[in-house]
Image 1 (cartoon, rainbow, N blue to C red):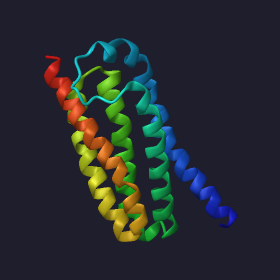
Image 2 (cartoon, rainbow, N blue to C red):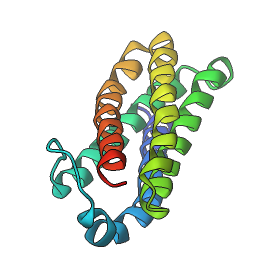
Image 3 (cartoon, rainbow, N blue to C red):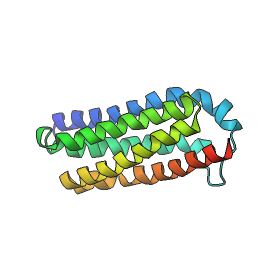
Image 4 (cartoon, one colour):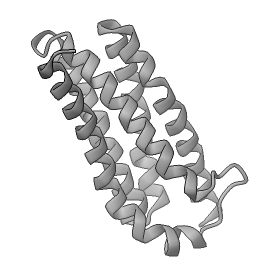
Length: 157
């Protein structure tokens, strides 16, 4: 891999990790207090699992972004725009759910996030099949998060 390619890969991963850092600003303070006190469904993953999973998912997202970017910015503008939109929705969800401490607003934010991830998988798959496949673990995790968000809303009227 040539130097510009390595720099593009690092930048792609860094952009995604920064979305995670933004979301964690709202998450860290809410977990030991507000989130810990909530009634949660039986399938709630342990708190220690969220950090490693999200770091891994943001890395996979960054690699997918890099693969799509390598195919050209101009001709893949729409797919890259969908990626940017889902990444912004990802960060917004943390603000809605943890920052505002609102499972209802979190649910209202995570549903469009899931839809944009699905569109993103399709758009990236058309550009580079590996880029599309790299987003599959992300939609699986967000599917679990959507169910978790829903049940937190239902169990905490």
